[in-house]
Length: 305
Image (cartoon, rainbow, N blue to C red; front, side):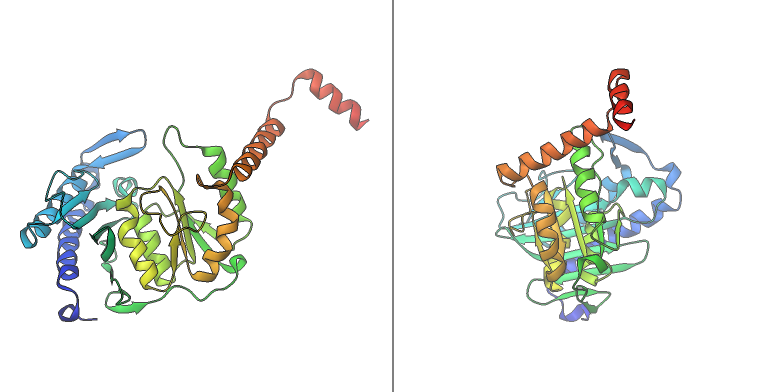
């Protein structure tokens, strides 16, 4: 789809994403010189995030001064927060990858109109890959139409995810969930940039994606890419109202349908019975892996004889 036939607001988002990408690519030439600060344990922000975000905001507000902004680093301090047009921005998704020179990160920009995502751009500056979508008009990668994969069996599928890494994250539960998915698929990947993970589901490069703890700017643009490419997006129980629920599942329809029953019991919206079963399973695993006392070991030895 040529730029002349794109929605004008999508064209402006592309312009903003490319401006941010140019800042990121320049900084990547000497990533050791980039100043990094810590928002919380294992949650980093760089001067590049901030410069890229400013470039995006300036581009969008120059074109649409009455619009609102919701951005990862500056929140809603810019723009008109009461507007029915809100730009949702992650200027550098995959900051941890970026500061290590690991080339998996992207710019994510979405436009919500009256609370519904209508335009989406995910731009990978390392590959110059531009993923775009306008609601009702399909999803594109570098102006070529993309569709979710045609695989129908979970056992043949490649699934991407993200791991928890902050204090308070329930690591044991996540590892149990990961184990449940891993043994049912042909592979699980953890690239480290959720917006790009969603774009890859849309393009059919992977068959599904799931992660807990994500914010709206991580998933807004990518979710429209997936649905416009023929996929499904929801929370772990399969409900479509996921944007601010901090858990997301995306995939081609058949794979999504097979992942829901695997992930449902790990959802914060799971029923009491499912939650109790997960807790009991984790407690049993902990008990089995705990170091035994000498008395307990002697009893085991006795049984063995």
